[in-house]
Each structure stands twice: as structure tokens, then as C-alpha cells.
Image (cartoon, rainbow, N blue to C red):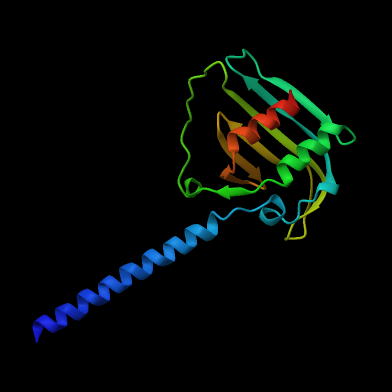
Length: 171
């Protein structure tokens, strides 16, 4: 009799553990699903983007080089297309505190920081914002997206090639 009760308890615990693992897996897959910017931030539209600026560093460059791209330039449309049509996968690293990052720079290494400036973005709470609202940072292969006080560590498909393409446009 006691053996049957223990067997039922063990089966029940196993079912609960498996169910929790399945729930966690589904939550992970949902959180890290590939999404374009309009899915991540529906209030941001390209027609409200007014300019793009930032900086980049290549190799052991002494100081970062700044860039500025106006709305009516060819690079503006090209850069917007690269960022707004790209699919981003959020990482579970966002759930943990961030520490300091260190990178030993090699000759072909690079990093860039790209800020998109918007005018009259309406947020869900009814407030309106203008300025450098969306920022992407490629820190030697690690991609972070900053918007409205949130930071997401992201991945993209063919991330290294995509980051190099961005670098070619902003140089």
C-alpha cells in the first residue's frame, strides 16, 4: 500500500517537473522569437525618423570617429532599411544584471554606436517624445538595443556580416 502511494507521488512530481520545463521552454521561445523593430516598438515609424548619428572604432583606433546622416541622404534610407527590416532575437541575458565588459582589440575588430532621432513619437501612456530615442550598440560582436529606458541584448541572423555592412555605410 505504502509503495503505491509513493509511486503516485513520484509520478506526480515527475509530471510537474516536465510541465514546468515545457512552460519554461515555451516562454523562452516566445521571448526570444525573431521580431522586426515595428513589432518590438510599434510606436516607432520610419516617417518620424529625422536623422542618424553615432560613432565607430576600427582596430586599435585612438579615438572614435563620429558620423552624422541627414534624412535626405542616400545613406539614411540604406541604414534605415538595414535596421528596420532586420529581425532581432532578444537574449535571456537581459534577465540578469550586467557587469563590466572587457575586450582585447585585434586589428580587424570594430564597434559602432548608432542613434536614431525621432520627432513626435507617441507612447502608449499618451506622452510624446522627440530626440535620440533608439540606439544600437555593436560592441565587438555583441548587439544591444536601447529604447525608452530598456536595454535588450539581441542577436540577428548573420550578425557579423550585418554589422560589417552597417560599418561600411557609416564610415
